[in-house]
Image (cartoon, rainbow, N blue to C red; front, top):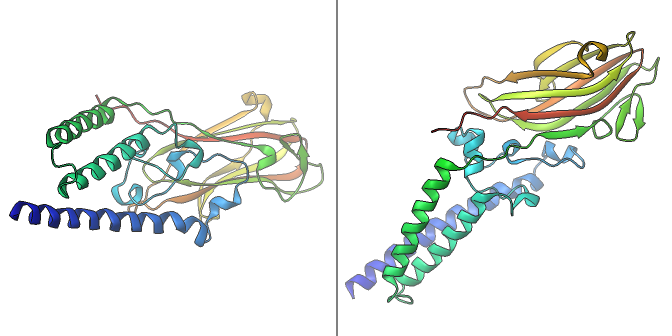
Length: 267
């Protein structure tokens, strides 16, 4: 009788903790729809896990690899390919079976339950040590970037001579401090083109880098740079790439690619 009462009390506490965590998680997920979220500016862009924000990434200062080791329910199209989601599903099932055992519904399966938990523990540890995630980049076509001048040609953004202004800017993607990011712009210019670039955070509140866009004749049409953000609060920032066209020469923007440089896998 005493064992049954203790087991029921432990079960109630465990169930309450799981329900509280689930409630907080649902509030966090609902925030993307109930509040103004800059991700909604992007159209037709797949946002990978490393660019998403959740309850634990800013709080625990997670690395890119650590993000891929934890469940992620924001990238809807990536549910089946994200391995950590299967561990979350398995742990939910084991918690359900454990609750059944605590309530004496599955009272004769204690050894089976123990073996399942031990197997799950070994698999989770092996996964956290051996797994090397595939970190995809965000590729934004020129036509998907925002513009205040020029026009489009297929999936490219094209400048119109004599029409000054921002030819392309975006995407609005979350970047985190203490990570190294690589930016690659693919474009084509004439030797007479006069245009500038600027990398900014949080709607130009902070400028990462700026300068004159090199002629594509000098770099085979690929401008590449890297940056790292220093922030003690580890708050996520919104990244944006500007291209300002000064009305002279030809300029065609093909695509912008952004990705974090992978950290070394611990051995």
